[in-house]
Length: 276
Image: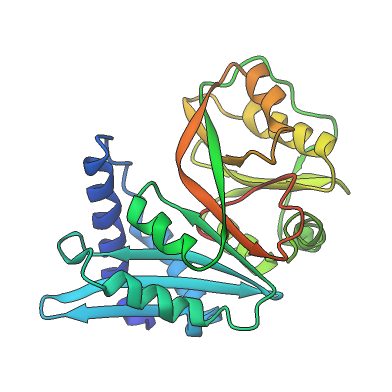
């Protein structure tokens, strides 16, 4: 993938996920601002060219994949195939190309959509399958912890230290990309961080469960709209008391987290789909 391909790849991604929502009987999510969404594609194409792939057929662009590699931990950021071209081998070829970028990686992460075909393909890579749950509702009755503040680029070293402890590898450049995309960094000094935006928790990591609970409480306290918070793996039991305290509804989530090798404890941690 080249930067000139980004608008078409972004449109393909949106079409593919909307088609999946319709197949699952769910309303499609609102479309993001293309200029904002393109920042993710741009930075991954620039930082991880060996993980950025396209597939074409006689109708044009048929699929796209984005993968990243940070401090020895590989992650699949995106794999989509045009709806009318699915189940024909294109996704398998794209996954193979993106997964080649994992050669020599000590850890691998994939956050799978509810598409059973995708989950089956990812499981065949030898990754462990972890079920996930989510929370939904309008948070209420929460008070932010003392010391919680809005962060900036000067706080990226803290995010890197926390990520190494929680997920086995830092991704400071990706947190910077989220900030460029208009998200807000919340800092609990010396304890952890969260990224929020558009009424959603984007990611969260902390050195210990108590700090993660405080961060989640502070993040949710800033929401005054209906929100969905996910994905939580079953390793994130620390989150359940705060989610219940906020009055959110808990349910199992379709889709899965797939992990392999050394990704740290992967807790206390809430991943982001774009940067794992």
